Image (cartoon, chains in turn yellow, blue):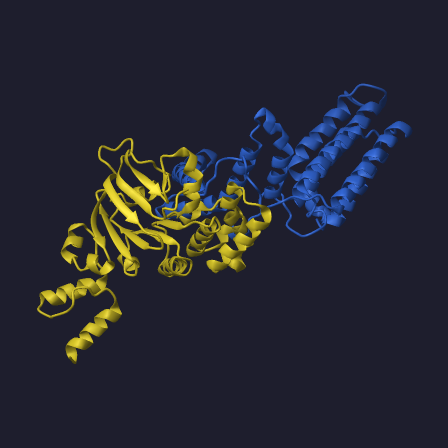
Length: 280
Length: 270
């Protein structure tokens, strides 16, 4: 392993066998250590395919993906790459392997050949950091969707990865579960410095990301901080993406002649801005 | 209703028997099966009965629950008894019209029925006190020497445990699909057998489609967590042979010895 601590996609193209166009098309991206990168795109934009290219579940048809200096096309490094870049998936039911929570968290560790005592220590730690310790002996099918996703996160965390890739991890959850899962991942990003690649189509989830990458037709359509990206309301609408409700409202009000800032994302910011206008 | 399904026969209580190493339990069950075949006299069956009652007491599994395992076998039992009773030739004990009961017939009828009953009871001792997951664990470890000849011991156990993991999920899904179909007027309950079987088709098709999709997803999730078969794999659940396992072995060995002695010294009764 080299000391490179970035994930690099260099001019990556990927096509499914039966498809006539590329799912990911000459996409380049650099993800820096400790960053929270949100990948945004509507259905079929190629964002999920891109995620699976990042930990060698798919291999690029052309171009290359480097995970911490390791090429995903290199068979020798396969398990190192997947240990470094852990992944959670959309359907909470379809990624839990074992019949008891703590055994599911152990699954990745068993595969890596971690010693028993070390395994127990890491499982306890991982469950603690997703606040699921008291569910350790429960059966997964007794848990809610959000809880199952947090178990999946714990399963990845126990493998001590540097990066967590979440492939629409909140898409099948109710609003409460969605918030819990996102909060957990944000906290891990801040406290443990784990790099996060957050793939989603919910605008509200990306407002706190360090960077937003908008993917459309397998290509990077926009890239920048959430403010930079969402201030381009017209462009977003062209890409069939919504902007956060407050950003859209600000845009409408601006069109009606109110001198509002163009980078409002949250209700609080809107309130401040309106207050500023009312009593300057 | 779906929240507490128990799989197979497993009777989930805590007892010294439940806590025995599943490997030991599997081996001892095989010993019990062998000893059932070695019994020649009623005294032997009495010994066996005593043993079953002892285990029932130790494992907190009521005898009533154990006997439940015999219920599906009742027709075979009756058939075995009657066939042996009427169709064995030998010294006539009692006869009326063309029906004839012989001493040998009576002996064999009793013998085979008891043998069948105790075979079921002794395997039930294991399945009642061992969770399916522990059983598949035990099987994996016992069969692992066969890996030398490429017997897929780990893969079989993994398949078993995934199947167990997905049973509740798929049952929940069946429920959902059924409700969705009933909301649109599907009828699963009335009509004759053929009609009811036909009504199951719109239930099974989506269920299968979804099961395949789940399988694909799960395979990918397992790969993402570095699953690459049983090689160089460690285990969270470690099985250790304890004091109780040794005691259990001694008890079964004693039973086996008594049954062998009974075969040699006690003259065949009946």
